[in-house]
Length: 56
Length: 238
Image 1 (cartoon, chains in turn blue, red):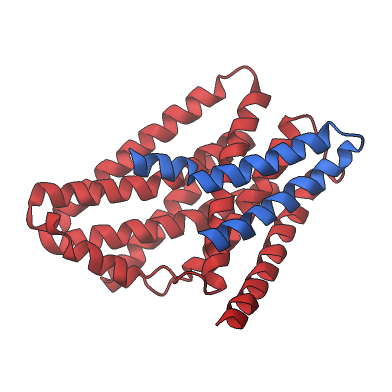
Image 2: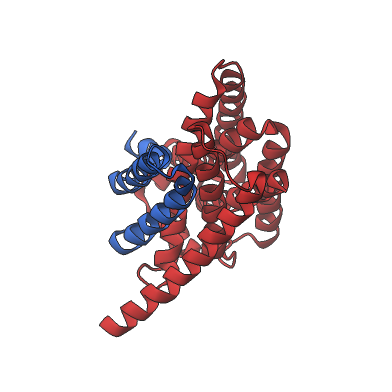
């Protein structure tokens, strides 16, 4: 069951990194310059990938 | 272009997973014979086929497609992020590369192989777990693009490729550039995931569909930059 959960959702760190990126993009989308959301999400996700690569 | 990208990403991603499943089935087959190991792998593939049909049919009948689009995109982001991060860590030397021979030896050394029933379950579970990731890619990319059939065909083509090469070699497919494939597929899945997620939230991409290759290029070039940066950092720390 644990292996199944990890296969579908990944580790808690992966979920946190992805959620943080989505929240940031959501804030940008509802902020004064919504067009920036298209840049915020990829940059935040790449930063998340760097964090996960470092922390495992 | 998006559809070709979807099919290519599915094929490459499925290749990675089927290679890992093949290693487990091969290790089990040497203990309980090819016929039994093949029935275990076949049973797992049948379960996956059933899940694909059910998942596709259920998602196709959900009335609020934007909601489904968001959930699918979130899965793709989780999946792509994991693959890209893993490939970056391995590329930068922070983690050892995935070793099919070591995986093969680990399965061969497991106690369960002495019991035929337990060995059958190892092959079944191994194929099912590796195949689950393929299932996720097929359902997510297929349903979203309304091209489930060609996407599923790409996954089946990957399976046939791995079976053909594996049957020819009769040993773990250790020379498949798994990390490079994971890197490319991770970047592609993140591109599709982030594109569709923001679209589901009501965002209009300035370049339309043209944003997809731009996103993929951003993740892949950014990932390569991170590999170089982290490798230099690890070298300086050593």
